Length: 77
Image (cartoon, rainbow, N blue to C red; front, side, top):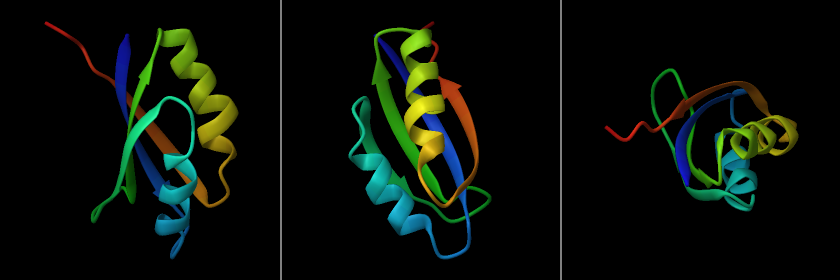
């Protein structure tokens, strides 16, 4: 199981709508809105890095209002 944080920047005034849309995606376990350089953070859980890539490219980045994402896979040490 691979967990990751996805930091999301949105168009002005779109953070709440983006957060709601992201929360309904399979593989997303939680979503919060933020103050600062990113507007939304999503926590994901996928089977592997390929599934994570598919989630981001096919689902997350297709949500209207997103301008940029930064994905941070969680490393278990």
